[in-house]
Amino acid sequence: MPEERYEDSKLYRIRHSTAHVMAEAMLERFPEAKIAIGPPIEDGFYYDFDLPESLTEEDMKWVEKRMKKILGRNHAFTCREVTPDEAREVFKDQPYKLELINDLVSGRVDENGNQIAEPAERITIYQQDTFVDLCRGPHVGSTKEINPKAISITFKPPAGAYWRGDENREQLTRIYGTAWETPEDLQDYLHLLEEAKRRDHRIIGEQLDLFTISPLVGKGLPLWKPKGATLRDTLERWLRETQIDNGYLPVVTPHIGNLELYKTSGHYPYYKDSQYAPIEVDDDAFLLKPMNCPHHIMIYKSDLHSYRDLPVRLAEFGTVYRYEQSGELNGLTRVRGFTVDDAHLFVTPEQLLGEFKDVVRLIQNIFNSLGLVDFRARVGTRDPKSDKYVGEDHLWQQATEAIIQACSELGLPYVVEEGEAAFYGPKLDFLVRDVLKREWQLGTVQVDYNLPERFDLEYVASDNTRQRPVMIHRAPFGSMERFIGILIEHFAGAFPVWLAPVQAVVIPVTDQHEEYAHQIAKQLHSAEIRAEVDTGKGRIGGKIRAARGQHIPFMLVVGDKDIEAGTVSVRLRTDEDLGALPLDQFIQKVHSLIESHSLELQ
Image (tube, rainbow, N blue to C red; front, side, top):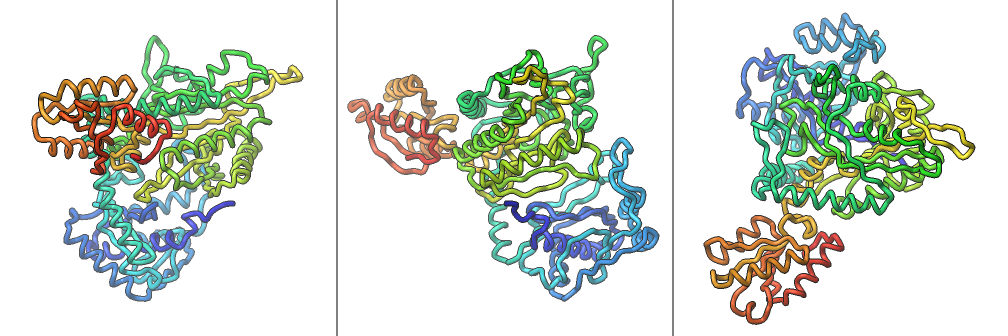
C-alpha cells in the first residue's frame, strides 16, 4: 500500500515554515537583500539570497539566534489569495519574486516556449509576523509548532547557486538549514553529519588509493587506480554472473552514436541541456552516448524475433556522458562520465508483470547482499502539466498500472510522485538509506511502451501477426561511480572481505622472513585471494597500524615459529588476534566469507 509522502508529512511543513523564518531573520540582518526561493529538501531546507555583502560567521550566528526568538513567539502562518497586480505591489522591491509572478501570470513554459501550466488569475502568498512570501505552502499553523531548540542553520556552509539553475544568470547565496520535531532528533542528525565528514568518499578514496580526478583529464571524469579498479571489477563480475544466471545476455555498444538515433528515441532534444554538443564527422552529427537504451534497441531490431524468443534480456556495463554544471560535481557521486549497469528487457504484454516482479526481486537481493536493507520504493509518474513526456495516454496508464500491481503483489510499500517518470514511461525507483540515514536513489525499473513504438519494434506472435513488444529498463546500481562512492561511505572504507581490494597483507617480522612471506602471498594468489607483502622498513606494530588504516581485513604476521609450523599469525582489522593458523585453514576461512558474501570478518 502507498506510504505517506514526505511532502505530506509534518516534518515537511516544519521545514518549509522554518525556511520562511530564516528569510525573515536574514532581511532583518540585511534589509537590502533580495529573496529568491526557499524550499524544503530531504534533510532540511534552504533559501537563496542576493546579498549586498559577503556573509560572515558572526552573521550566521546572529540569524540563528534571531530565528529562535521569532519561533519563541506565537506567529500564525496566514494564507491569502491576491490578484497579480496586488502581488506585484507586495513584492515591488523584490525582482526575483516579480519574475516568478510574471511566469505565473503568463503560464509556465518550457525551454521550447511550450506552455506547461495555465496562467494564474490568483496568486497565493503566506505571511508570518512581518514577513510575506510568494508561496503555495503547506505550512504549520503557527511558529509555536516549531521547537526553537530543534533547528540549525550552521550544519552546512553557505554555497553559491545560480538563479533558476542557469549559469548565465545571477549568482545567489544559498543558506542551508535543518529543522526537526525534537532537540534529540536534531542532535542525532548533527552527529550523523560529523560521521559523514569522517566517511567522505573523496577523503577515503584518496587514503585507500582508489581513484583520482585530474584537471588535465577533465572535471567529473574519475580515473580508477589499481585498487579502485579491482573493487569495481569485483562488483561488475558479481552482477554479471548474477545476470547470466537470470537469463541476461551480455552486449557491448560504442561510446558515441549518430544524432538521428537520439532524435528518434527522444533523448535529443528532450535532455539537450545535459548532453555534450554534437560532433561533426564526415557530414554526419554524432553524440557522446547519453543513454544505452537506443543502442540496445538497435541490437534487438537487427534480428526478427518470434514470441518464442521473448523475453530478450540484453545487459551491458555501458559508459554514458552527461554535461553536469561544474558546481554540482562531487567526487564519484556526481560526475560527467559514468558506467551504468544497464539492461533492457523486450517482453510480450503477457510477460510484463512477471518479468517486472523478477527484476524487483533481483534488485532486492543485490541490496540485501550488500547490507543495504533500509530502502523504500517510489513510483514515478508523469506530470500532467508538462509536455516533456512522449506517448499516448492509454499506454502510460497501462505501464503505471503494471508497476503498481507488481508492487502490490510483492508486498512492496511505495509512494507515488508526479514528475518523477522518465520521458518515455513511468518507473519504480529504489531509495536506499545508508548507515548515516541519508537517502540515495539507486536501483530503477521502468516500463516503456513508447520507445518500441518510436523504433517500430516487432515480434512474430503465435498467430503469425506482427506485434509490438514492451520494454523494461533496469539498473540495480544505477551508476558504478555513484554506487561505489556510496559504498565507500556506507562501509567507511572497511569493505566486506569479498569486496576488499586487498584482502590480506603478509607482514614479515624481519628481513629474514621475507622469502616465506612471498611464498605465502604466492599461495594466496593461487587460491584467488588478493594479497600483498609489506616489505617496508619499520616495526611490526607500525605495519599493523598501517594495514588497519587501509582497512585490510586480514594481517598475516610471519616469523620463525610460523616458518617452522607452516602457519600464519592472523590479526583482524578490528584488532582481534586469531593466533597462528595453518595456511590451508586460513584459506578455507577466507573462501567461506567470499562465497557467502558475508558482511562480517568471522
